[in-house]
Image (cartoon, rainbow, N blue to C red; front, side, top):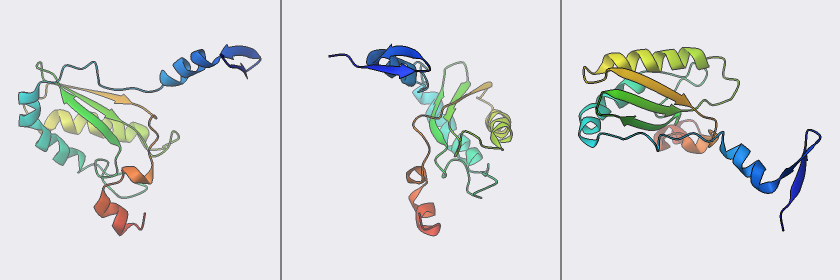
Length: 138
């Protein structure tokens, strides 16, 4: 039996609501990753991301768990899937700018950077690297 829900004065079926909520979930699944190129640049990219710090928490964005996925295509386009600690992050624009600029500059095989932001899955303390969880008593 299908369930209906009242949403802003309109009836919406359960299956439509699931589709609508899933539209907020973004991935890099469609990106054709070049494994050889990834192996060549990933360590440099990760080191670069570890040099970008969330100003409110003072942990780098990689170990903070804000980077959900990294892929690079054969044409040298680096794809970054990331989130923020909050949908209302006051530093979102600055963090995005740093990710785009610094990763583009970190390796000569990277020709372009595309950053996709998502709020699903929602960031939580469980995303923080274990050594920082211990240090911060998470």
